[in-house]
Length: 280
Image 1: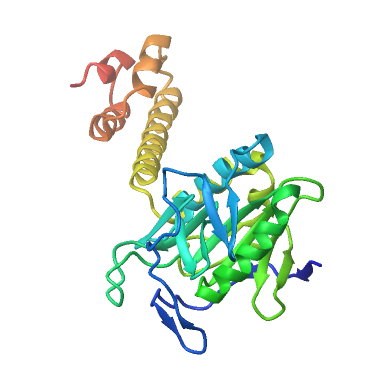
Image 2: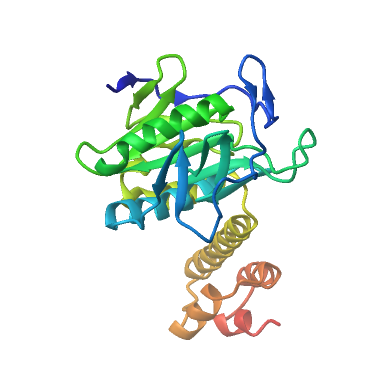
């Protein structure tokens, strides 16, 4: 039975790393010491049970693309997002989450890649049992946070609770906050495909993406140029000097602030608009 977890900000503890031994839990196999052959077979081992990872149908496949886009745009520096990354979580478990976030590089304690810190499962009716078992196994291994996104029936997002060994329902208006995320991820974007692009754009702005910064600078410069052009028109209008459509287009289309400033200074003494637009 799902438990309800409310609150507008879902914060997490600091990262814990990916060692092979966790106090009170015993030793674990290396994350890449597989029981199955990755990229050769679709087989997975979940708590000793061999299952076949079937290709996705429309609800699952569409949602996973949205999920990958959201996580890729929200991930913090030093972390990497992977899809269908198979991990040896236990002696009897070798399977992949749908999407996960881990530290980039190698764990100096093991010499292997880092264990996933956050994992997501896209859950359909037929995969709910597997998702629940997988969540318990991942949690015992040390994955800090595990989320499930239900795409059939009552669409919802849940987080696995280690304390109660059950899924906790997240409020649609809440946000996921975590050290591996550079910006809060809105839960409602995980449920509604129409909100994905907005959430991606907001995350890129929060991360000060270079392309976004360039667009912002261009927009600021364009706005400044427009302001100078309007000042030129106000001065010419006050002096009763008419501006032709071609001259107006030339002034409005100019992005060279130095040239516009020269035109602005000339506007108070020019006899005609031609004298202004003829200035080099």
